[in-house]
Structure formats: C-alpha cells, structure tokens
Length: 555
Ligand code: GLN
Image (cartoon, rainbow, N blue to C red; front, side, top):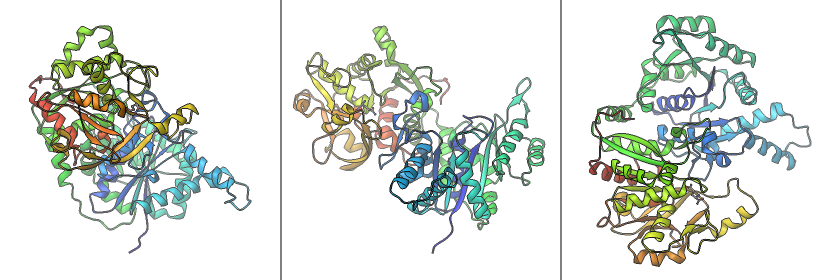
C-alpha cells in the first residue's frame, strides 16, 4: 500500500552544541519503536560538498557510510539509534545541493528558464528528502537542519520547510531544540528568554515550531513549561523537557516520559501506536548495572585548539568501545594519550601497562607518528592488548617491520616517500589523485568484502569467513613485504577476495593476548544493539588484563 510521507524537521535555537543530533536521532528512535519505518536525514549548511575534506578538530569525526559517503558524525548517531545503514540520500550540504542545481542547469534541465535561488534550491532539498524516503522505504523522515535559527547559512533550508508546510500542513512537524540556561547559585533558575527570541527568529522566516525541546541541565518545571507555551504560542504539553542524562542512549527514554512520540504522531494526524522499546531499555539498564571497570587508552594527536573535542573527533571509536563493554557487562573508562608525550619522554610509555587495552585510531600525516609507533611497540613487547584502526594497523605494520623483521628504516610512504622499506605504500589507483590534488571523495571509501583465515582471532570473533567493512584510506600494506613479515610471525587474517589487499593483521594468540589491526574502520559498523565482534574480543581481552582501577569515574 502506498502511503504519504510524514516529515519531522529538527532545528536549533539559541546556540550550537546542545545535542541537536542526539535529539533528532532520539525522535527518530521513538517513532521507529512504534513499528513505523523511519529514516533520518542530516542537512549541513556548509559549502563543502561532503565532510571528507574537513579536519576532525574543525568538524568532528568524518563518518563513512557503506556507499562511501563521507559525512557528518551525526549520521553515525542515526545509524546507531535506528540500527539501520543509511545511504548518500540521507545527507546533504549547501555545497552538494548547489552542485546538483548547477549541474542540472548546465544540462538544460530547467528548460531555458532563469534559475533562481528561491525556489530552485529549496525545491532541490525537498526532492532529495523525497528520494531519501523512497530509498529507505520510510514513512517518516526526520531531518536535522544544521546550524542555529537566525543564521544566514541555513535560511534556504528553512525556506524548504516553509514551502513543504504550506503545501502539506498536516504532514510536517517542526521541532525547535533550544537551550534554557540556568542562573543563580547552584544553577536552579532556568531562563526562558533566549528560547523566546529563538522562536521569534523562526517566525521571521515564516515558521512556527510545533514542539520545543528545552535543553537544560535539569528537567523543566511546570511553571517554566507553561511560560514557554504561553509566550511562544505552543500547544499545551508540547514543550518537552530535555535534561542532561547520564548516557546518551537514555535520551529517547527521557523524551517518552513527556509522551513525545504520541504527541508527534497526533500532530501528524497519524494513528496512535504502541511502542516497543524493550531491547533499548535493556541496553540502558545494562549500562547502569555494569560494575567491573576496563580502562582503555586511546593514543591520538588531535589535541589542537579546534572547536571540537576529542570526543567529537573519535565518537564512533568511543561508542564502539562502549557497545562492546555493555555486551560484556563492563564499565569502561577511556583515557586520551598524547602521542607527542611518548616522543618527548620515552619513559612515559610505561604507563601503557596501566591500561587493559590500547587503541591507535585512524589518522593522517606525520604529526605524533613516532610516538604512536613507540606505543605500539610497547604494547607488543609487554603483551598489552592492542587494537589498531586503519592508520593504527598501518603503523603496527611499520613497527613490526622495523623491530621484528629488522628493516630499520621501514615506514609508510605517507611519512617518508624515500624510505628503503616502503612497507605501507599508496594504492596504485590513488597516485594520480594525490598528484593532481584531486582529494575530495577519492580515497578508497565505503564497504568492501574481505575473506578471513580459519582459526585466527578475527575469524573466531566474527564467527564467519566473509565480512564487509567500511574503509577510508589511500595507503595499504605493500604486498612486496608480506612474505617476510609472515615468516616472522605476523598473520594476515583478513584479505580482499582478489588477495591484493591486506585487511586484517594479527599476532597469534599463543604469542600475544590481542595484537590486531584492521585496514578498515570497524567502529563505523558497531551499534548499541549489535556490538562489533572485534571490539567485543578486544574488550574481553582487555578486561582479562586485570589492570583495572576501581572507584574512578567511568564514562
Ligand atoms: N592515512 C592513512 C591512509 O590514508 C590512514 C587513513 C585512516 O586512518 N583513515 O591510508
């Protein structure tokens, strides 16, 4: 049966960074939990065509979809909350929308007419939302519009909402996520004025919110809710408390306390449906009940002065660690280790023994590299569980080649193009892209299959012989050196079906509790309800290390 598509838009007021992405993901979750097929779309207002060319310290993690789309970290939240793999139809930027309109104009698709910003840009946006609904077979599309109302940049996206609402008023719900600051000693006096101003900003572009999500450090009291309803002309009961919660997976549960799902369905004139959040609640309970703590160190270099925190830069890694820990009923404490420190004072490497396990995540360029390599060596020699993700795998190869295979100056050509032992080298098909500075969207991106070697840690963890994982890299293990490394004990347990590319490298269990690196990014496929098998195996080994510290604040 063909049915109408319903649209929920989530916009931000007052300021950024108040959790609009998690709010949008949670709204999608509570609709989906009613058995309604729901998908999530992210609109980013920047001119970049995708997130691939942005530095994580500027923008946060670059998330990668199965189809190779490099996008905003919120897309990761959507996949994790909805437990669905999304596609490029679920993501757009000002740059990508303009690019299609300009391409259509060049192809004479506007029939010789003058192409005006309004309505062409908003119509292109709406067209894409329709495509997202069709591609994901979704009845409800939850779209998060990046930025904050009142800014110049997202105005054409808000115009798209206005046009759609005008045409189908009953099929569009607009949600304003606003910040309600607290004043006074102890921060108990919640101030609604900034939210009132945000609503006026929305009014000035012809929109009025149906719901206000009041982000505050505590739940909004009845008086404040009534004040917002009255001052902002919001239907009774449609100001929803969005207080801080201990665990982000509790957010949908918190919204349901204010019956948000039911109210949204009613606004969209959809039949009420009972919800099933049993599995999700179990997850939230598991997170609360876990007692034994596992301490994980992440060695990185993103300690600059950008706008984004480390948590933003490595969000999928952090979440993947948490998912695995929940599944094993452990609490996890993540600590950040600056690779520069290991370069400056090699003695500090000793502290790696305090961790149940160590991760070197993905990365680019030469900053802090020797520190990372020293950390990997320490983990290998001292049998500290080590998990290398993409660059973390390539650097483990460099370390192993230098120290075990005795190829002293071995390196990746990303760092030293003239190394005598280029054990990690640029993919042949990538050379031209780098030479011609064709950087945008040209890495080896997205899902590729790999075959697993029987009896290895990887094969046992996955419990199958063929996997598909997401990639984002230009360099790979150089086939020329594989035999020499294998002779010294390194096992390539995952390889591409054409046997050209090494996808997983590991040391046998008999020689090390867990020393494994993946050329792909397993963190992108970990979900709260489907933890990634390699992360589970890693956390299991890390918890066996017994290097846990009690009574410390866990994440
Ligand atoms: N810099 C490495 C490459 O391009 C690794 C990339 C990554 O870690 N995502 O191959």
